[in-house]
Image (cartoon, rainbow, N blue to C red; front, side, top):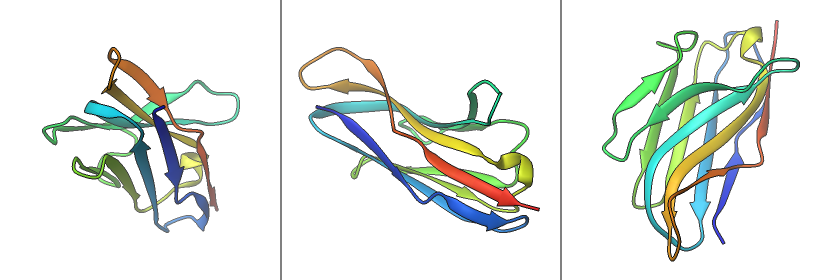
Length: 120
């Protein structure tokens, strides 16, 4: 059974930094994209950053220049380094992966979410 487990959330003051990590485990043949989404209270879940298996990255305009996504294909992990945090970055952050389990078909998997709170 494939699982995504996040870690690294917490409370930080505005201007501070946090690093989120996500590890995919289980019987995995390959992982395509790995992403971080976030959902603030009363808002829809939004894509924050994405990274392909080749390392191509994409960011939401609101986090460009402040957040950096990276992954380790050998370890099936993805990280999100968040700098210059703002109160509006407060949300539950979810790890997402589009992967091919073994056996099975390509599917979307989600982590349980980790809370990030930025105080002003």
